[in-house]
Image 1 (tube, rainbow, N blue to C red):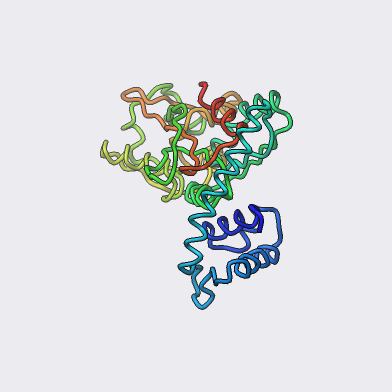
Image 2: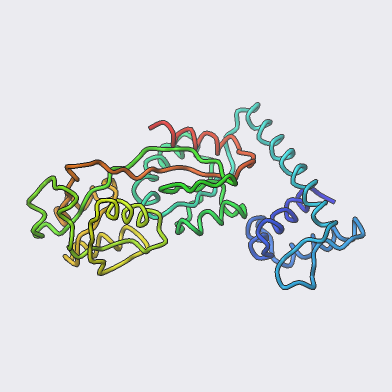
Length: 292
């Protein structure tokens, strides 16, 4: 029996999925099945309830998982401690990020980190917020980059900077001449929004609702880039983080209007699974993100 087999078993239980467990560990689905069978033979017990449609552990399986989790975490902690003693920063950091952060906030940090630590592999996946949190929980991702982080005791949340929200419209839109306008000026206008389940959409809806402002949602998208493209063809106005439209404002394809009567900010955060053993590389990357 090897620690690698115990880790595969832990990942299988946490994902409830043979394919995901295989992907996390860089092996085939068949190899996962073989390792579970090997563990069952070693302990002479059944670990998984194969008669149930939904993945579930037997009582023996749960006992093995509880013990294995501690063993795996201790082993990983030892590996990281030895790396720290030897001043080694290497390995892979699997980052899951929402589109707006991945495209507009992450790149300069990514470049700076890789310049200092070229042997680290930064793997970046773009995900919707709901999928991102699932990736963190089932160990498909090490670190998540989110906006409006959810309060959940299963995660450690590291607050990062906040991004000013601005109104955007086509340069020839009637509102564009204002420079700065009161939020109430958007009342009744055609509006390009994010899809309802996206945290930024929920936050913007709350801001408008509190001010009794009603907009006409004509389009809804799941990422910032598509929202901007719709505004560029004058399909409507929108409210977005300021950092995401710098390029379009510079090219004059989008007009940016700051809200004059009240500032609204989108909080950003890094999250990881509570209790996760962070490698020296992960710790350094989080420290870099927090600098600003």
